[in-house]
Length: 379
Image: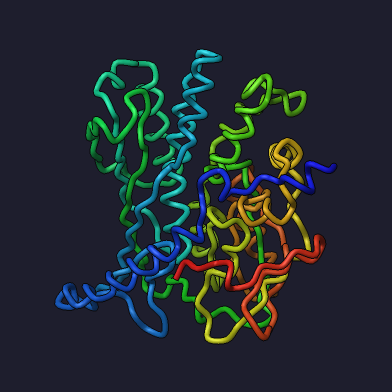
């Protein structure tokens, strides 16, 4: 108990400090904005009505009859967990982290209503000998193809650079990009539709997905049995970390196909539940969570073994909520029905509501935890 109070782990302490990274992201957005005039001669150019797509999870370009969407994302360090488990078990798990990577891309794209069309893989290695492992390469290819099929998009190609001296010889940097489309234009999810009284609906996560892995790796390093530590009667720590990320594409497309008016979508990834207040709304709003997802064993284990404070857990991990949509209260049951009809892998449930406030904030009412806008500097 004393150590939990005196020496809790933080994500920043594991080397991932969003306070250090976010100013660069904002500066890059501002610099990018100064290039927007370069595409004005292509139909409508960069999407710009009441709000811009800069600072959102995907970038939009307007055409006469649709919006084109573009996303670039990366896996992070989860492949290092797969590498460690490969050495321990003989199973590569690269089919799973392939799905994780595709999910980081397409789950961002659907936040504004875009359907992914084509996904490209970027696989940077430190030594070309990495490709000599046929089993691992086969798993990666099959997993990427399967994920694209689940997201109903094409695998359009990619790039495999060898970056000696930048990437360690025994590992890879796995990332990718995608293009998508919003068609017809009326399917576009516009942030200015968010309003007081809206309901917050969560889509359950499968587990840790691909965020907070650096902290999880630090925990594994100090456990006597490392990734082979049992977290319950079903999974070791390593197995639980490598459960692949849910793909939310078909669930979101089902909502839009049923003409449900989605006011906003949030891919709950980096920044944890702070991401719920990402939208740039005209007036400050509070995102009040009243019902929590079921407690997953992986998060209980990380919190206990870290130790990690509850507040840090919710500011870092998805904590069982992988995606969120905001809708009018009368549309909640329609969203739940659409998700239920589309998949049995996860469920949707009414988690809270949006309220007027003197400042932008997220309130997790059952836990007495609050995050304000100063803790999310992504735009």
